[in-house]
Amino acid sequence: MVQHLQVDPSASHVGVDVDVSRLRWRGVMRHVGFRRVWLGAMASSIGTWMEGVGVQWLMAEQTSSTLMLGALAAAQLGPMLILGLPAGLLVDWVDRRQMLLITQVVMMAIAALLAVAHAFGWATPPVLIGLGLVNGIAMAFNTPAWQTLSPRLVPREELPRAIALMGMQFNLARVAGPALAGLLMAKWGATLLFTINALSFVGVLWAVRSTAPAPPASTGAHAPWREVSEALRFVRDHVGARRVMLGLLLLSMLAAPLQRMLPLFVSEVYHAEEATYGLMLSAVGAGAVLGGLSLGRLPSWYPRHHIIPLALLMSGASMTIYCALTEPAWAAACLLVSGFFWIWAFSSLMTSVQLLTPDAMRGRVLALFNMAMFGAMPVGSVLSALLGDRLAALLGGGPGLAVQLGVGVFTLVLWLAGAVLLIWRTPEIDDLKPGDHGHARRPGLWAGITAAGHRPA
Picture 1: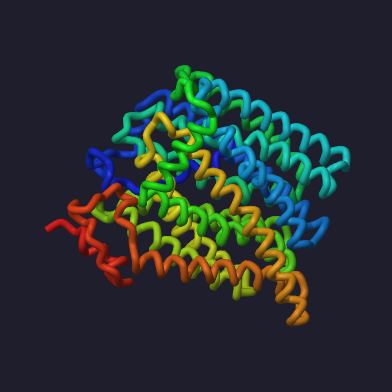
Picture 2 (picture 1 turned 45 degrees about the vertical axis):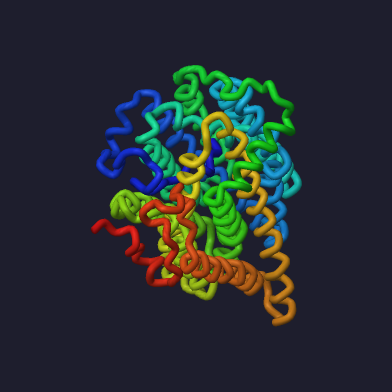
C-alpha cells in the first residue's frame, strides 16, 4: 500500500478546537473503523517498504548509476505531477471508499507482476521503470483518496492523533520492513519481497471495505476548471496554506535525494551489501518513530509554525553531516536523527493542510499538495544526480563521491532554508489572525526555537 502523506502531526496546536494533548493514543483506537484500517495499513506498509528495498537495490546493483535511480524516482512519482489535479477532482466527485478499493487492487496486481518478472529474470531496469510508472499512476489516484480516510473515521478534535497514528504505523513499518527485507533478500532474493508485498494488500482491502460508504463531497455541478480554480485560490490567498506549500516543496525536493540514493551510499561509499542497506533504512524509520512519539510530548502551546522550520533546519543539518561520513555506524546515527526531525516537519505540514482546508474542497487541495510533493521528489533526485556527477567529474571522483556531493549540496540548502524560515515565521500556519495571541512576529533564531511568545503566562 502506498500512502506517503499520512504521517505524524503534533499532539495539539493552535487551530484545533479542543486540547487534544489530553487524548491518549488508545482513545483514537476505540473507533472500530479506524482501528481496522490502522492494522491493515500496518501490514501493507511493511510490504511496501520491503518492495521498495528490493526495487531500489536491484536498480543500483544493475546500473551503479545515480541517474538511473533518479529515473526510477521520476517514473514512480512523476505521474502525481500530471494526474494529481484530475485525481483530486475525482476524489471529491465519487465514493472515496470505492476509489480506494480500486486503486489498492491495481497496486496489488502490479506487485504480483513484479514478483513474476523477477522470478523469470525479466526484472531489468526498463521493466522496473515501466512497472514503477504504472504504479505511480495508480498512486496518483490512491493518495488523495487515502488522505480523506482518517477525517471520516474519527471526530475532528481527534484528527491530529489519528493522522499521527497513521504515520506511526508507516514508520514502524519503515523500521521492520527494510531490516527484514535486507535479510530475506540476501538469503532468498527479491522475488520473495515482491510476493510478500502483493499478499500484504489483503488486510488493507478488507479494512477499507469494512468502512462506511463515502458519498461525494462535491456535487460536481461546476466545470472542472472552476473547481480547480477554487482550490488554487484557496492556497494562493491563505497565507498559512501558501507557506505550508513552500515548506513541503523544500522538504520534498531537498530531502528526497538522500533516500533515493541510499543504495549507492551503501554500495559505493561504505562498500557494503543488502543487509546494511536495510539497516540504514531502518535507522531512518526508527528515528521517525521516536520523532512521532516525541511530538505528543511537546507542550500544547508550542505551535506548528515554529515546529516546521525548526525541523527543516535540524533534518537538513543531520543529512548534510551524513553525506560527509564514510563510517556506516556514524552514518546510521545521523540517519536516525534526520528521521526524527523529518517526521516533525512532514507531520506538522500535513496536519496543517488537513486543519486549514474545508472538507468540500479537501480532495482538490490535497491534490495540489500531492502534486507539489510528488512532483518535487523526482525533480530533486534527478537534479541532485546531475549535480553530483558534474562535481565528481570535475574533482576526478567516482560514483561514491558523486552521490555524496550531489545529495550533500541539496541537504545543505535545506538546512539554510530552515534557518531562514525559523527566523521569519508564519503564524497563519496555525490559522492565527492579526490580533490573536501569538500572531505578532518576533524575528530571531532564538525566539523561533523557544516560541517564548506563545508560552502561557
